[in-house]
Length: 380
Ligand SMILES: Cc1ncc(COP(=O)(O)O)c(C=O)c1O
Image (cartoon, rainbow, N blue to C red):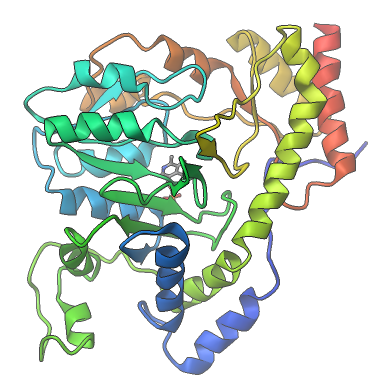
């Protein structure tokens, strides 16, 4: 029996534990210490945002974004249904209604041509999610938002370093959220960041993130004592997490290049199956530079996807499905609204399968995955 090939595996770049030791030696292990500062500076410099706040997850970043956006009960937020629950939950927690719009068949992102029809007088924001780090059409989404006075809050959980027409994802909308969960290219176990395009929401976000207090202003010396000034929660990670993350951020390019090389190899190994109409592979776009975060195949039917998944499982290869579309999930039916048909979302939810992709995936392992996929279609 050959070794199991997992779907993903956390990778350490090597300096994480040194930085954690350094953080401990500094004697400041709660949030907003030296390593949090270094991470935030990295985001501003490398991504071109105005400001960045480290959070303990992308989920926390989205919740923080939802609070400062001012979205409230009965307001509506337009988003894809093919996304993670946190994209919607953050707004449902404010009493708002997620309005689910279908995705495009090429990039699996919010179909911008359907957004205007979903706008009502209650619409407050559009939340594009960049699936697999491939950018949404941010020009069109930005133009619609401007015309209707809506905020753009990017769910860039999968998109650290990815670009749209040269601009970094997460720094294009008024607010953008990143994830550093174990499965991402750059990780710290659980972690995230909220990015700001300009100064508008920064001050309130600092307060909400610090339990609704003006503690950050106090540490800056801007006030002589801090107190409860707004609603809030604890959305900041400690310095152990920040130290780990900073080590990874310093190697973000190397981590991305490795993933891109693995994706290119999958494309090459499976290209003729796509040419023969057996499956569909991810599509790039000249306007977008993605970061090889996910490599998926789209089977031609749900039954075929399940057959392929089980075939790979039988060969000790873990390939996994992705989102159960939110509009058809129990909570999505209860809290959301779906104004139009969702044929692409339903099809992609039923047929997408993600292949193993992680830094240390060897050429031999990848060849095994490619051969196993090809073997399935040779039999089918
Ligand atoms: C699109 C999207 N948004 C949000 C999240 C939540 O990220 P986190 O686990 O950092 O809270 C994920 C998680 O993978 C995601 O895929």
